[in-house]
Image (cartoon, rainbow, N blue to C red; front, side, top):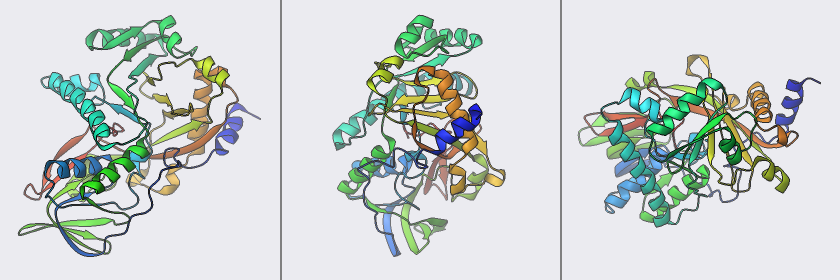
Length: 389
């Protein structure tokens, strides 16, 4: 049997579902919204963008009536399928931020750091247990040309520590590592589905109404607000906030601005004590390598390794289908790269495999604005940087 065939068999034995969503603590289904309902603020989308919007709106004005509608289940799409990296960067990394927003970059960095601190404070305030760990993250070089770039990045960024070959392998033990940069404070790790579930529960405690399996299909301006057409009714609101991620935007002019690109993830079985000792990872940082096609990976709370990235698959016509969540060839490639990075773990099994669509845009970080005479606000184009919405 060839190496590819062996890895294909290995990954296809894993559960074809997101690890984060396949855990205890999932809330029971919420009721659909039917008929005609009115509110001050309608939020479309039950991912991080919509949930944080609803929570902050209700916190800032407890008298404001807020209704959030989700077409499936809260957190089921990108917000429950990502790697669980909660990053302070608002620009998908410093290099992208400096390139695209040179005059505003320092301000964006400051706002991003404040945002991550505010997320941590909000989780504490609302008692949300989502396995939040302020570990920081390491960027690793696996090719010689990447080492100088990482050295420059460490010199430019406060709180970043350059790690030479021996230092990086003392943190996370891989024979492929040549150097690394550890941003010690700029990233936290979370259980993203638990974060979404916790945010939803906090919203409801404050009086937000959440309806699931309630797709919104169209928007229309009215004299005194916005009409949101639902599958089984109508939602009338003074203001609307859109957090629809990779799904077709209800403001049609926004649809060309993003494309759905599929990303894929594997999760191992829990590491034994010997396997854990073989990879070290005492400080539990998130890790990403430095290629244009890169992997991101981390430990879970029960010492599994989540391993994702590399392939980014676009389907002609902006296609999105449940069948695209599974791609055996990509899973086998991920397994091959995993065991190249951690040969000391050869033979460990994978427990879960999944994929999902990212709302990719050309500037690689979120954009936002308003429509319908300022009554509709949107934020889109996270390009995979979604936990810190």
